[in-house]
Length: 204
Image (cartoon, rainbow, N blue to C red; front, top):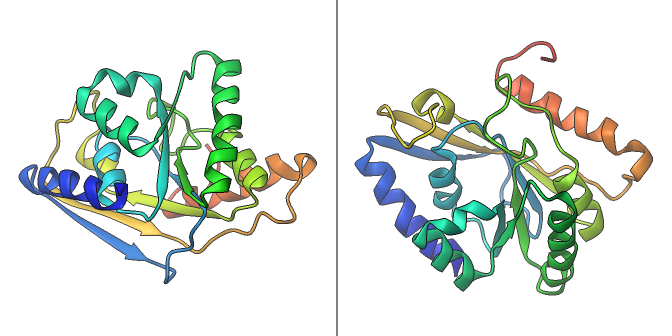
């Protein structure tokens, strides 16, 4: 249901804001189920995430999003996952409970490895959550790179310039041979891809 409801809300808003939103698939069809990850550096991200229309996806979002009535209603109706980022133990418990439900119904998950959009550099440090979830679910990771979002809207509010935003959906990354010992190495390898896509030649 979310893949139909969300784009019908987000795309008209993007149009009103003067943003030409495009999706560029570097893989077809889009793998599912999977753990989709995005670069997160703009208030515009929440709209482009919804506009993607990914099939049978559940978003892992901060608890505070529920203070917005639209996100609260939409999130509760479609079974999205809200976590308290400041309370790591509760966040982990919520994710562990969600893994069982997600795996049972063969749902996909979308997460931002940077955690918050407020971080240093163009691509912030990656957290383990999305990668551990991919291992637990035995899902591939599908990187999605948002091009243009940060340039169009970099402040704390949804104040944007007109222009083009492109969601690049890249080929899946197999996680079947990952383990706890090699996890951080794999995380850095994935982050390096985002640095390349952002045009950054060396680690920040």
